Amino acid sequence: MTTDRDGWAGHPKGLSTLFFTEMWERFSYYGMRALLILYMTAPIAAGGLAMETSQAASIYGWYTSGVYAAAIPGGFIADRLIGQYRSVLIGGIIIALGHFCLAVSSMPFFYLGLSLIVIGTGLLKPNISTMVGSLYDEKDTRRDAGFSIFYMGINLGAGIAPLITGALAQGLDGKGGNWHWGFAAAGVGMTLGVIQYVLGKPRLAPAMDRLAAAPTARKSGVPAQPFTAVEWKRIAAVGVFFMAAVLFWSAFEQAGSSLNLFADRMTKLEALGRPFPSSWFQAINSAFLIALAPVFAWVWVSLKKREPSSPAKFTIGLLFVGLGFLLLVPAATMAQGSGVLVSPWWLVGVYFLHTIGELCLSPVGLSVVTKLAPVRIAGLMMGVWFLATSIGNKVGGYVAGFFDSFPLPSLFGAVAGTTIGAAVILALLIKPIRRLMGGIH
Ligand code: GLN
Image (cartoon, rainbow, N blue to C red; front, side, top):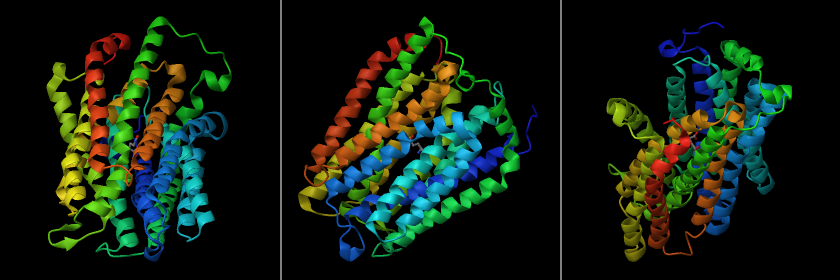
């Protein structure tokens, strides 16, 4: 195998191709997601679909859950049928078509667009991650750093997107734009991603060779060996992480639903004396993530032996997502009690706490699942990790469905209580989980 060090910071050249493909894909996903629930609930006169909040939240929950659940068949199709390169290519084209459908103002196109994005993302999202991993030989120590750079690409796209789609859809001053232009911009972003992916194909050759050469039991049809006792224990540990992740994402992924509605309806949309569109709040998490990721990397390294174990980091993740919702309780009390629009700083604070939680849980989860999974079911375990996000999105959509019918301080308080309670339980389980992990941190 060639050692490919000609790209960014001594990484393989293919990393930048995959970085920009995922950046544009996440640009389209989050650019559209920032608008979705606002568009569905906006009155007809404002160009929206005038849906009840509960119905819109339910569609939002099904859609965002579907996008991540589709990663399981998407991974399977790549492994067994068409390979990772083509899955990502076809997925990207389908996603772009989906966004362009939403650019058309008609109900059948609305549902067709959502379905296409679900299918396309299922083909693209898991397989592009597999390709990143395949840029490196099995023992290559650059792999973790490669994934960190890739996660930056995700958040660069996710952070810039709402600023552009939001300005188009709601106007720079938030006083009215055209929703469909916002959706079209998402489609343009994905199209740019597909073009640069195709142009970068030669850079991906080493990854594709490695994938083609991998002698997986699944490909050759060799029956899998039974799991050993150690493997069973590790799978049980993944089960615990999975449940914690479901709870975490149920709260965190309300960013696009209940927190988006809170921004739109109950927050003063003005900063430095200038009005701005509510969807711009959707950029804050990514901005914090890009700023804080290097800090966290440094903190973990400098703690050396005292670096918290993965279950301890999961506990911190759950705690912080809960603290974010706890911070919303006084804000919601003020907004609903006196009917005033609250300061935008409340939500900035919430996203700050949520980003800390995300940094303790999301990258840690990806890496610990790959380490704990027996190699012969590594692909399946990656699918299981995305399934936690899928279920989390569904539950989050369900909770957001009560936005209009339930007192908001109680709704947010219940989310805070559940996640903080789960953090306490997980804290008590750290030691037994570490025993299950059998030497893996
Ligand atoms: N923000 C990350 C991404 O879009 C992680 C999302 C998740 O797994 N819930 O890839």
